[in-house]
Amino acid sequence: MSALKRKRGGKGPGGKAKKVKLVENGNEPQTTEMEQNKEISVPAPVSMGKWKNKERVLVFSSRGINFRTRHLMQDLRTMMPHTKADTKMDRKDKLFVINEVCEIKNCNKCIFFEVKKKQDLYMWVANVPHGPSAKFLVQNVHTLAELKMTGNCLKGSRPLLSFDPQFDKEPHYALLKELFIQTFSTPQYHPRSQPPPPK
Image (cartoon, rainbow, N blue to C red; front, side, top):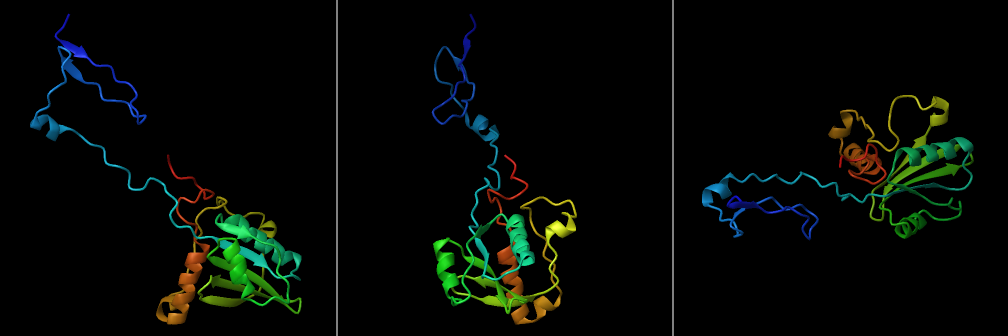
């Protein structure tokens, strides 16, 4: 029988397989400094895929919206995996009620569609609860159903936002740019984002 015996490698308590060691006469192996320096260690991956950016966007509307606005709102929820929905808000309610609704739903961004005189559609994009908030007039709405899902994009994938150079020159445009980036960007490693992170 040979003087060197092979120790069996089995699963340890942490679930990782032990290294196979060659031992002499059943004693623990002795490692020299030279062998320790030659040992190759595999570095940990840059990111373990933890979902850190917990941005949540509440997308809802006031009462009195038409079917096109409702479909637009549903399309936004479909494309953005980090959204939450809520019931329609009464027209008589004040806008500061939105802060309370976002707090209940655990959201820190809000997209709110408001209809005036049953014809003008306004979209509020807000950072809840401390602001800023911006109000936009929405025109020429085209839903995904009309476009027959044109293009080859994944549901819940990363959006492409393109801005004019003017957005970097003026301070109020720079603020709007940052608001749009924070609201519409899909957080990295979000559970519902596409494509899923590699394992």
